[in-house]
Image 1 (cartoon, rainbow, N blue to C red):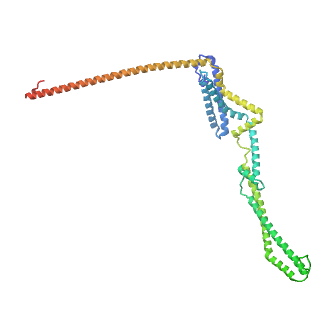
Image 2 (cartoon, rainbow, N blue to C red):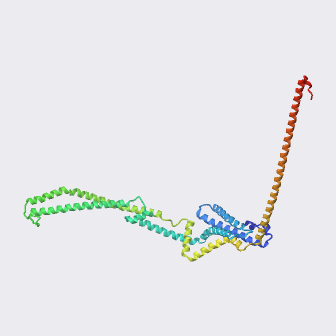
Image 3 (tube, helix red, strand yellow):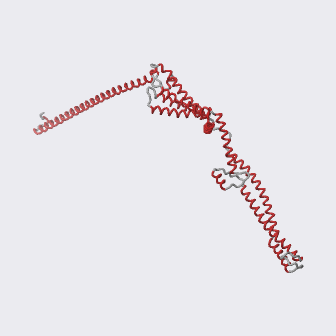
Length: 420
């Protein structure tokens, strides 16, 4: 009886249809089971999303189960005594299907949880590997300058990492010093070649050795010998080879120091880049959310036909369980209890109509009595007013007659004995 009362069964009516008791008891059990499954589903979902004590999760789950139970109870209770139209029936089935999906999905994820967690671990591993590859390609170790197209692509995808070490500046410093060393070395080598040529020509000219058209072959300090020696002296003065050799040695020392500094910078860059890349990589461990589990379940359904079929069969089973009360109500047709409920409803409607007619009659009689009392009150008021006016007129007439008698007595000279 208590179970049947949960779906709005009137025992006084059902007592006249005892064969329907089992039917409505089973229907009540189906509604209770749907509420229990909804509470269990919500408990699983809340534990995935919220980091709250178990008691709080349980209260939330029970509240959700109560809501689902209340909706199912309304679906059944509102159908007692009636055979709903197709539109109403389809609306109720649609509502039951929606509730069934909400209840089924967390339970489905819980059933496939081991396989889902393995799939999530694999997805996280692949995601981490792909992210690591992309970050390493956009932030190469050791440092090298990216092509303009690759740099733009990495910047658009937000994969560029900025660290304290600046290998680009260190490389530019080394390149600049090497260029300066190369330029100065070429200039010094050019002056040294010119100086060696003048020395060779000077020895040959002054010693009388003939070198093609460059020397005369006459020994002694002639004009050409003195000229070549003067050019050599002038070249030594203008080239400033000692100063530039010292400058070249200084640049070579700076370049060597820059190369060592570049090595330290690249080492620090490699360490910082590796650390920052590791920070940006998704963690393979950590709590698995319900959205990740749902994506993993979809991936498993795409990989395995058995998982796909079993998942949908379980969904349909849970949805059918939630739709079962309204489906059984529809498919079984009107029961004896339903007909009796309809008869009681019709009798209640007739009683209500009789009551309304009686109330209307009573209301009319009351209004007639009120009008009668109002008319009687107005008539009494009018009579009282007329009587009061007549008494006032009699009083005025008596006063007027008294004044006439007083005037008559005065005229006769006997005011005290005026005739009446």
